[in-house]
Length: 466
Image (cartoon, rainbow, N blue to C red; front, top):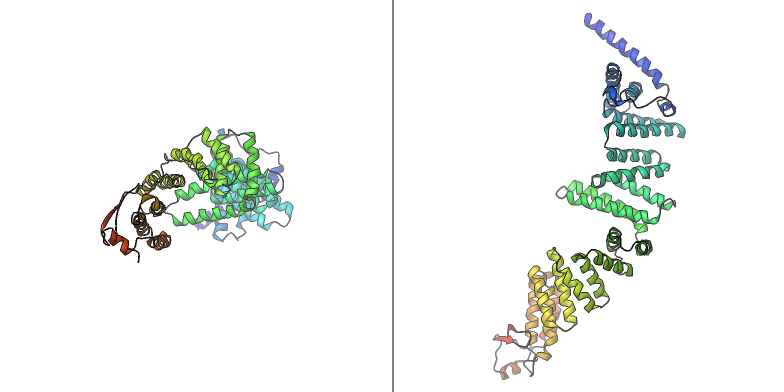
C-alpha cells in the first residue's frame, strides 16, 4: 500500500509539471522568435543555469517523453508532452545537454512535416535554425553544425537556397577536408542555383568545383582499403561532376579564366587553379593553357610544369624549344613520369636525326620502365631507318634490319600490349633481309654471329630472306 501511494504521488507530481508545460506548449514554441525574452542565459550560472534543480527536473521530464516518442518509431503523441519541458531547458539552461539540441531539431522536423500551412512550416524551420545557432554558441563545432543547419534549411525550404549557400560556404571553408560528403553535394547545388539566377559570377562555380574536387580527392586517397568509404566518395564525385558538366566546356572556362589571368598574371595560386582546371577538362590545346603554364613555370619553376610545357611545344612541332623544358622535367620524382620524359627526349632527337642521343634516352626510359616496349620500338625504327646509310654493299646495306627486328622481338616480349605493332614491323622489315645467295657470297651462314657496325654497333645473328 505504501509503495502504491508513493507511485501515485509521483504520478500526480508529473501531471502537475505536464500541466505547466502544456501552457508553454500552447504558444506553439515558435512564439519565441518574436519574443523579447532573452534566449541565452549568462554563462556564469553554470551548466544547469540559474535554477539547477528545476533544470534537472525539466531535462529528465523531456527526455522521458522523448524516449517514449522515439521507441514508438516517432509516431506516438508523446512528442507533444516532450516539447514543453524541452523548451524550458532550451531557454533556461542551454548548456545542460548537447543532446537537447539534437532532440530539439528532430522534434522540429516532425512538426515541419505536420504543418498545415506554409506560414506554420516557416516558423518551425526558423526554430530549427535558432536551435542550431544556440548549439554553436554553447557547444562549438561551428563548421560541423552549420553543415547540418544548411541541409535542414535547403531540404525543408528550397526557396531559401541563398541563405543555405552562405551557411554551406562557411561550413566548407571551416571544415575543409573534414567536410561531410552530403554537405558538399548540397553546397554545390546552391552554388549552381545562385549562378543560374544571376546572383553569383560563373567563375564561382569553377572555384567551388575546384575546392570540392580537392576535398573529395583527399578523402578518396585517405579511404584506401575501405571499399565502402571509397564507393561513397566516388558517388559524391560523380554527383558533383554531373552538376558541373554544363559549366565545364572549354568555351565556358577559357573566357572566364582568361579575364582573371589578364587582371592578375602573377598570381601563382590563380595560375595553378587555371592550369589544373584546364588540364582536368582537356582544354590543354588552348593558348591560355600554354601561356599560364609558361608563366607559372617562370614564377615557380617545377619539373611538372616544365613537362606540361614541353608536351604542348611538341604538339606544335617546336622540338628545339621543347628540349630545355624536357631536360628540366628530368628532375621529376615520379619514376613513371620520368620514363615518359626520356621517351619524349628520344622522340625529339630522333626527329632531328640525332639517333645516338635518341637511343641513349630510349635506353634510359627502358631502365626505369623495363616492361614498356615503346623504347625498343623506337630503337628498332632508327636501326631500320639507318640501314641504307650504314652500308656500302648488298650485304651491309641490309644487316641493320637484323638488329631492328631483334628490337621488335624484345618489344613484344616485354610488352604484350604492343605485340600487334611489333609483329607488323617484323613482317615488313624481315622482307628486307639479304637473300641466301648474298649471305653465301660474303662467306656467311644463317645463324652465324654478326656485329652490325656504323653507329648501331649491335651483336645479332645472320638471317636470310624467306
